[in-house]
Length: 63
Image (tube, rainbow, N blue to C red):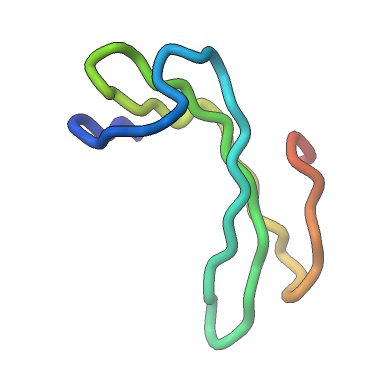
């Protein structure tokens, strides 16, 4: 997935890990994504994972 045009404070900083949570069927699932943002504010998602067990942590980088 590539998003273009969104200003991000990690521009030109190499690969970074970002944590997130999503609501799936009323339950929160936690996840992470490895992203890279280039000079034109082009965000590339390189890897990601989402915990399949609701309300359970996942360590950044785990799959």
